[in-house]
Image 1 (cartoon, rainbow, N blue to C red):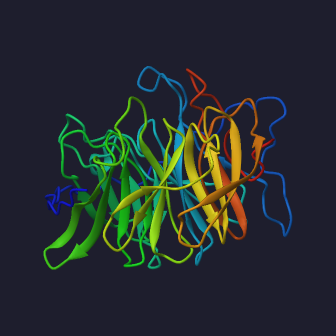
Image 2 (cartoon, rainbow, N blue to C red):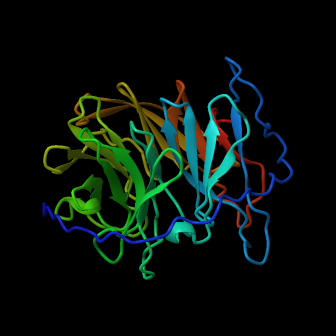
Length: 335
């Protein structure tokens, strides 16, 4: 494994204009609820504000990533079509647009999100920087102040998902290559470095390679999904060394978002429309399939996070050429 510490230059980007408010969700599809209450007064679904279809926005609104701020009871959702970031609360059905997109801070699309202990929000930009020179990722404080807009090392970087490591840094997966980038503040400001390159162990194949990422229970490794092969990979936090997680051949093709709750690992298999549940060892070396269940046939769920004891799933709308509302985050993937 090659370990590189190339420092990415900080892209100087001015903080964008004041936040805009998106359009209200369009008419509901039959069978989908509108934020009904579910236990302790908390909604079973959360409504996202989408943009109306127009000449400038022919695809409607599509979503992907979600990050949870456990201490503050908040969650954040990324919009692929435009790069807006939406914010919601565990006890409220309606969310709001938190950060504008469409070029704000150089962001035209957004993917994975996570939140650290200080409430800082880390956003993966997917292909935002490929061939454009724009940032690949952003960091904001809990109040929405831009802290960093960074380019990652390399010319073909597709930052997909992000997790906080035991050292407090953020670790971003690359869907175009078997790489993980580390992002943290230093003496010279925020830096993005290539932390792990597993090209000698993980074959780069067509489609999405590394995606969802979670920390193992003993904090000794990251467990990472490779969606195009259905494999899980273990990256040691000590040195970035990669090895395949033993799953005894479990079918995990289209693995996207990962959620770990103790020894229970939930794998969201987007276009396969399945939710897999595995028992993961504390060190992340072995996972045993406990079961699979079909997710809703009229949704493509992508990433998920735990908030207030429940898993929140993002309905991406990736299956709709022209997306229409309601735009939702849901707690029951089978609805």
